[in-house]
Amino acid sequence: MTLRKYHTIKHSYIPTVYVLTSIYILQLPHNDSLMQYFSWFTKIWICFVIVICSAASCKKDLSNDVASSAPELVSVVFNTQNNPKQLSNSISCSLSEDTASGYYPLNTDASTLVASLTLNESGVSVKVNGEDISDINAVKADFSKPVKIDLTADSITESYTVNLAHFTGLPIVYINTNGNQSITSKIDSVVGTVSIDSNTTHFASYTGSAYYFVHGNTTAGFPKLPYKMILDSKSPLLGMPTATNWILLANYDDKTLLRNYLAFQLGHMFEMQWTPSSQFVEVVLNGSYIGNYQLTEEVEQDKSRLDIHKMSTSDETGDDLTGGYLLEADNKLEDDDHVRFATTSQNNSLVVHSPSKITTDQLAYISNYVSTAENALYGSSFIDLANGYRKYINPTSFVDYFLVNEFSRNNDADFWSSTYMFKDKDSLLNIGPIWDFDIAFGNTSYNGNNLNTGWYMATTGTWFSRLLQDPYFKNLTIARWKQMRTNLDSLDIMVDAMSNNLNESQKQNFTIWPILNTIIQGAAPVAYGSYDGEINNLKQWIDGRLAWMDANINSL
Image 1 (cartoon, rainbow, N blue to C red):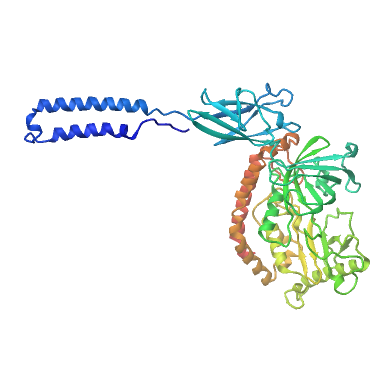
Image 2 (cartoon, one colour; image 1 turned 135 degrees about the vertical axis):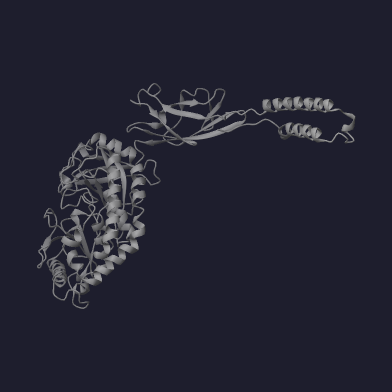
């Protein structure tokens, strides 16, 4: 509120002068040259007159020191009376300083919405986008864009901005399939279009053709399906690098919606060779809202993603045969879409993602290389620098992968599924990129990984329990944890920031998927009943896990 004062400087100090003068006169000695002509009675009378003048001056001063509130915007409401064809429920904006913010529903044309304003006083001149408004109860403007409101009274102007976000404020992905065909298969594609409204974000919007598949293994069995989207040409989406293949993660069994996002942030924090980027979006399929999704880069060999050598079918000899290969450990045996091989020592099953058209010689090379590395790891000379496992694998990549997955107690990371490895041309075998953390960070009923105490991969993990028997690898791991530890203190802040960003979205998501009181198979054995409860549990789990690993890392 702005206060307007109308007194002058002299009015503020005249009463003080009167009072000080009276005190001075009273204190003058009787034999003073001035006061010798006045009796005590006369002095008192003079002071009385001075006090009366002072009071009059104060009264005059107060009459001119009137405090008045500046024009103020009290509320902005889009009610159903003004918008009978657009709104089934009124929109009440929240006010923060000079900004009024709100959300308008899907399938609503915000450019035709009519607002009703409430002000703190009458007699205020109102301008909307520079034009005078006579009726504040029916304000028409294009509210699909920021709208400026100027309030003027007694030569004082206060300015406000009304910002309406479409639906939840997140980008909106509109998928339309030919003939409204359902997307139900991991093998048979469905052709359609995609249009991405970047909404209030600073990213560019996008429109193009695409074809779609169901994505995932276990998650493909949930009611809220994840999808793979293949664009007809390489394009950057929502600030992410140019590519053709994209994944829409449903995060159905993760009621925070954040665990995959949080894991990717860890991957970037640890500066792993490549970690997928992602953006949260709303998805509308054939005109129906189907929930909050995480638009994510696919794990693949690509110049803009995992940048390893792209092999052709002619790369079958010499250095050309050595890479690059992208593999995935899949001991769940769920992937039927790729060529598969098993290691000779531990019988770990791996599928080949790249090269996509692998030749017999290429398959023989990479399967033999991985098996030889595994034999060296489990051999009697495994810690030997020249002949042990370090001849074949890059230990630093395994350290970072271990810490991210052990810290989060990722149930799927133990070569069970979604454990990627890659080998570039003329290079060692690396592990990564990280993927699939929906049942990590305590969100699982398997293997005690709902607990934030104890080791998982360190004691039972394929390869990792053996790696940690090497003092070199163990010390490298401990040092890396301590090096990265300060960065991990930001995780709670990260969770708070992103959950606040998703607040409107989660309301819509759990309206159509009302599972906050439901225990999902394979996920946490406890339902916390609210989104805030899920977020608080995640933060508590993270804090407890950090404390436990700090206390036990040296005894790894």
